[in-house]
Picture: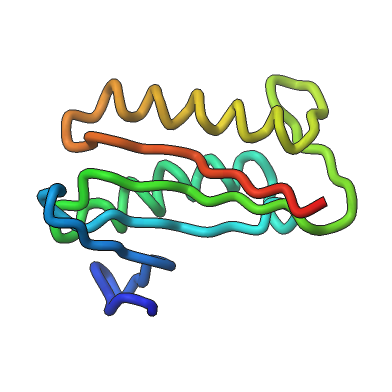
Length: 115
């Protein structure tokens, strides 16, 4: 079930609640083939962390990235990479964000490769 708007009329894909967490767990889902590396980085930083996790004291979040379309390469560090390397890059980004942002207790990249 989609949650109500959280801020500036924006809606996260999924918000979960668990009594052990101080706030909701926010999930944002992207189909990888529809997005560039820069757009996925933006989804992680600006959309998930910068918008959705700011509302209601959400301290845990995940960017769920699914690969299901025709084979595609993404640019990371000036090189074309496959899906698993894109995921590793995004996980490195998530770890850096977590380390620098005291508001975040946990941030993960969850990948599903449907090939």
